[in-house]
Length: 361
Image (tube, rainbow, N blue to C red; front, side, top):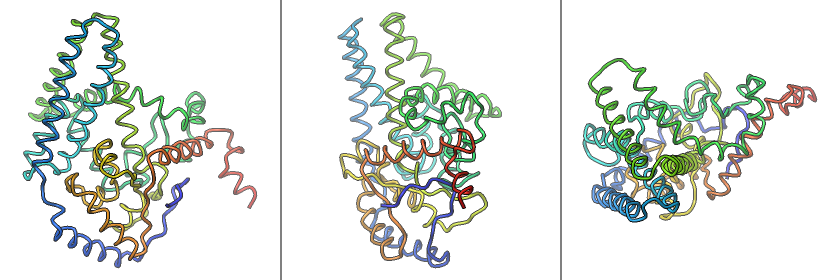
């Protein structure tokens, strides 16, 4: 297992030309094995199952009436909506259907109409991440926000924010309870900031209908107090589940310094981490546990990722490219430790380990 990176340091890598050639070789093997072929039956059954689960939750809510047991329904709804978001993510990568436009339509319906997030915002942000994972100045997922991922950004935090940054590793998972609300707000903000277009109007309409209908129905049926509690629990579970599924993939892995260049195979493998657990973990994380394979072959359907893992691991071993995988709990520990280490830079600069390292040199 590769140790987590603590600074933007270029990872060791094989010869660029050799790595490029080896990726082409790996691609041929994967393609010849049929692992890029679509699996429509899997996704039809998955979406049907999620539809049944949603219907069951609605029926259960109706039967319960104004009971505080509704909060269990809210938690279940948060889980199911996250699972729908996983499929929307897969549609955005062309994993579900053979046609690009058909995948876009499916992704837009699931993201905007069911989950309540912006498909176009996600596509733009996520595509940039996939092109340059953990690349300083290029990957939006490591841009400074409430949580910062670079020592240099932590050192620039204001006095107020630095108090949070110093303990951001411990605060990370509690903060995820607000991520569901943040995703809904970001969806509206990003769409309202776009230039007028037919696609923007369609997304906004779907988002407004989805959010207004859902919130109104909950408050009408459950009343103000229980209704807001229901919405709070559902969004909290959704936010934690989403964040806890995406965070283990890259946080604490190698950071690529601004201006550095890496071949495709190296930058995807060296910055990604797989989560062990097989089929059960793949179901829990929507296939995100096979992050290395997902980054190397973004359009590969979820059912093929496990077989691809065997090919990719063997290829990396043969070519001397470090391949990282660990358990889910271990990955969370790595993320917390990494974020806390970065947060040290928000303290007095003379207390920062990096500064002390140079002072002692």
